[in-house]
Image (tube, rainbow, N blue to C red):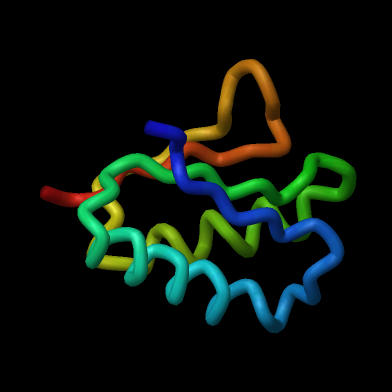
Length: 79
């Protein structure tokens, strides 16, 4: 099975909160436990915003930058 992913390239910082939380809620309902959020790595503005949202979401067990691609964050959801 392919890991679900959302690509936030070109999105406004103000939309990140809603997009990420909606994506997480949908994937949790579908039973997916590992997700990928693509935010890019140029200025880190989206990276910081994504990580801020992930810290607050109660469905997120943990998350980390992909060691092979720093423009992606891998997210693990609670059981």
